[in-house]
Image 1 (cartoon, rainbow, N blue to C red):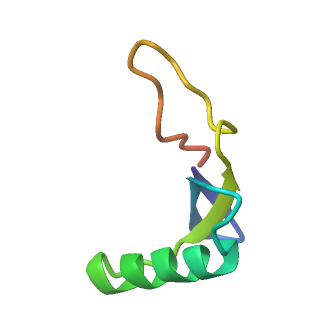
Image 2: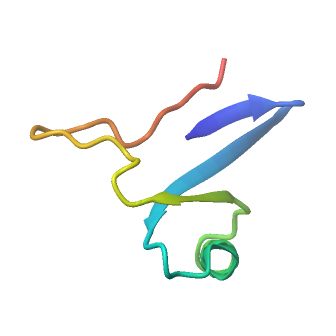
Length: 67
């Protein structure tokens, strides 16, 4: 999800994580990986398995809420 707040673009990545995962560590690891590979800082929001929408056909995966 891409938002625009305080004159800045903010990227939030929602990821599904199993209950037994340390969600804080998962969030940190993904943030570091994005920063080192792509060079951008993102917000990571771990959610429970099944919380993200599913669709049999091609679904929208990027929501751009800017402007």
